Length: 122
Image 1: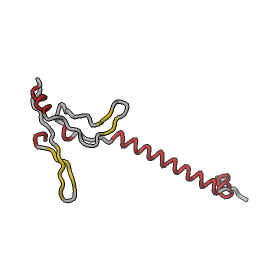
Image 2: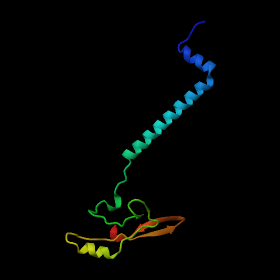
Image 3: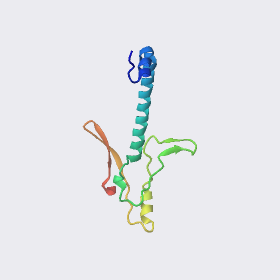
Image 4: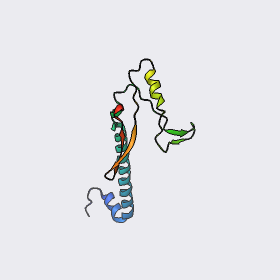
């Protein structure tokens, strides 16, 4: 009887196929988990959102979008808005060239819905 290379591996597959299948499945799942973690890490490191709308504004003032205390807070159910009188207060501040409120409102049409913004803050 002539032994081929990997005789021990062939014997293990021949006499204990369930152990071989279990090991193979475990290694495949481990490779899939490592690959998924690598993909998530890579997308988290490289995926950035461009500033877009407020890119040229040196200062943006917004309300706190979470409610609660420091220990326990949750996202607000709706968009929290600032009082419109704060725009006039900001405009009167020394060193401020202009202050523009961002009026946003829902728009629906053709079965879709969007959020539109006023031209003053464009």
